[in-house]
Every structure is written in C-alpha cells, then in structure tokens.
Amino acid sequence: AQKVTQAQTEISVVEKEDVTLDCVYETRDTTYYLFWYKQPPSGELVFLIRRNSFDEQNEISGRYSWNFQKSTSSFNFTITASQVVDSAVYFCALRSQIQGAQKLVFGQGTRLTINP
Amino acid sequence: DAGITQSPRHKVTETGTPVTLRCHQTENHRYMYWYRQDPGHGLRLIHYSYGVKDTDKGEVSDGYSVSRSKTEDFLLTLESATSSQTSVYFCAIRQGEDEQYFGPGTRLTVT
Image (cartoon, rainbow over all chains, first blue to last red; front, side):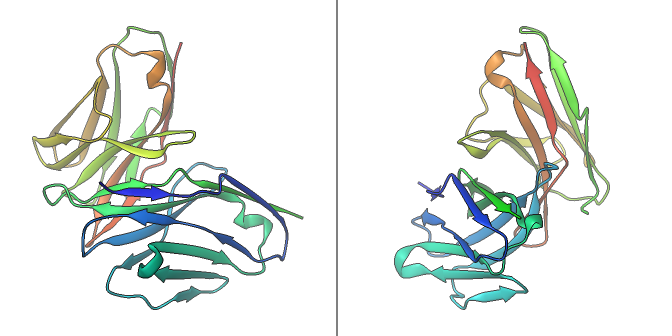
C-alpha cells in the first residue's frame, strides 16, 4: 500500500526563520515519484516540485530546497528566510500506478503560518 | 494555468438531493481526476478518467458517479447528497509525464 505521512499538522514561525516540513512515504514500488504542492489561503493547489526515485540529488529553487533520502523514505521541504507569503498548507504526495492512470496519494498536509 | 475550470464554485444543497459538479478543460488532456479535500485527510481520489467514456473508481468512490462524454468535460454526480459529502472538490488533469494540475475547487455544503 502507498502511504504518505506529514506528521507536522501545524507549524508557526516568525518571518525570516528557516523552516522544514517533513514528509515520510511508504511504497513497494522501485520506481516512484514524489511531489510537493502548496495551497495558499486563496485555496488553489500549486504544483511546486516533482522528484523521481532515481534522483537523490537535493534541489534548490530560490528560498526553497528539497532533501530526498531513500534510506529513510523521506522527502523534506525547507524554506529559507521565510516570508509571510509562504503561509499556506503544504502537501506532499506520492505517485501510485493504477492502470497507467497514475494516482496521487497525498499526505494530510502541514499548515505553515509565517508571522511578521 | 492548465486551463481548468470548475462549476459551480460554491453550492449549498439539502440532504437527499442530486448534485452535479462540472470540470472543464481546454487543452485536450486525456487523464482527468476528481478529489475531495477534508481536514486531516489531505486530498483523496474519488474517480478518474483515462479517456472519453473510460472511467474508474478511486479510494473514496461510494456515493459518487462520474461521466465523460467528451474530452473537455468530466462530471461528478452525487446521486443523493449526504452531510458526509460536505467537502471541497478538486478536479485535476495530468500534464506531461507525471504532474497533476488542479482546478480552483468547488466548496459543497450539504445541510
């Protein structure tokens, strides 16, 4: 069975602090993909990143970075020098294969609040 | 912007009434999905479609049906709405190899 766990339900930090959102996954597939989505207060879901299981290099995009570790089945997301606009719910997701339809299994989400 | 719209954006309905939500896409994507979002559960797949008239169930399909008579439209129907179906419903398309892009969502309240 596929499962994604985001143990941190809510995180609150002060602006400019660094913050890490944890994501732990379970899968029996040897090939899989992991994703992060952002849901700001306006409600839409914004795709942030995709990572495949063969690529364990960390990725950095501006203030965002992602740490993928197969050994611990984790795909953590770090925001450096957080800003109020980073306040959102963040979802980690795992791609599962169903007849080629590629279902996404989502974690429960982490609500991040950045206080000024 | 993956060209996805959902209608209605908000709806309040009474228990026992039928409800249909519409997802419309303009970019001819083959795969379309319906999810529901509930606190503590993230997003869960209701049904998906892999082509016109080709649909299948997701993990929380009980009480829902879908139809896809043309590529651009994927309809989600609650035959007899219940309070447990109060939720935010998201439609998504698959673009490229793996990424799913989501519509703006429909907030449904069943009273």
